[in-house]
Length: 286
Length: 287
Image 1: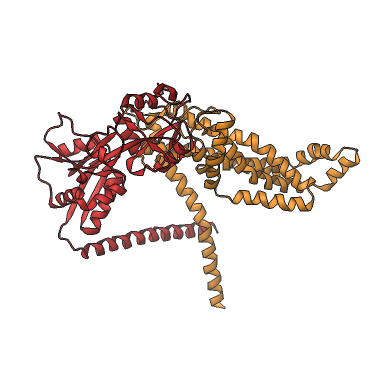
Image 2 (image 1 turned 90 degrees about the vertical axis):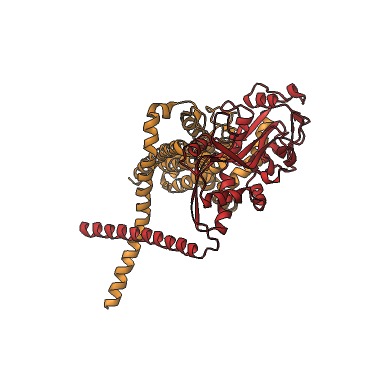
């Protein structure tokens, strides 16, 4: 009896392995089918490496690009801007991704800004405060300013609502306002929508969200007197913004595939894709 | 004849296969949790991991202390039990002993419906109704807190406590109660001194089931607790073991991800312990 039990268990195990193997095969097949149907002549692999904040933008760009050029495989390693820039300068990746500008000592590299990330600071509709300086925002985020009366509002406590650790918006806000790792939040929510909903529900609250997501439910405040809008992000007057840039090494030539992907990312045809991914397309500049 | 036998055999095999799906899943999940969870714990150091008070998974010098989450999960569950068990138990007594058929016919389906409501709906109502209410009643600047999570959890565990306790109370032999009544005890005295003690292992099973549900709940809690990795306080934003995983996993990379797996392992161990306790109670009941 025991032997039979054991035997059947082995059979089950063997069968499940078979099922898994079967799945693998079929997916391989469909991949190669897609390959042969391709229209464009470009082939190859492109590796990108860097900023985790750019995940949304890059993933949707890769998806759109692959629809046109199925023979090109583009990989994306979400490691961080610093790692991405290092990888580009060492030549271990084709395109480095950075959500900050290159520093002066990072030489031999070229940055191509494909999009701008504007982060709006939002408050409840009933809040009279509509203009804060960057320092005031930083002090509110770190808990130094605890009452709206300190920044010209009513005498009520401030509730700081932010995003979860690892979120690109949080990383962007904290690095630009220069409060990285020292923010004191009252709520950490997992989506832009949740932040907006929470701010619209709590009269005392302040939060941040991607510019593209801000709706009428909340009011976006001016930062240093500049309203947050696509125009003010593009002309650079709105402070809480950062570039999404592709970093390439000057001393090596890009492969055809990498070049075509970069051209695609810069082109005007991807404006909607970048906007949908929550950023302002740089091709709208000028 | 032969065909029949083969069909019998095939069907037997099919049933066996279906039965194995659960076993294989449990084994696979256990192995996976251990393989994915142990390395990060080793690297952080089990003491710093379990007893560290600060969780800063994405800071430049990251800290991975999960004591706030463990304590929050424990406090939250205890709080839910403190509120939920008396209400659940009294509901069960009411249904089994006191309510007339008409009233019970309304209350019982209501309790059963409660167990069918998806947790995200609990969370939503908690977020829209409970959180602002707590803010107003306690005059807080922020309503998302441990208390909100406890109240939501307390309501969520009611059905398992009520249904299991009611069955246990109904299973108490009539003779016990009749004897008590015959000796001159009132109905309420009989319930508290005879019926409940006789049904205690069944009631305990219901409570442990409720604890299992409370400690494993993520969605509803995430929507009302605020999710800041603070040490637990009744009126501050807190993060549970479950919610830290669900909130950070989507963007987690590298070591942060490994650490989240380790939290999953800790949660897994918690739930295993609860299951073992539950089994002990169930066995005690059979004997």
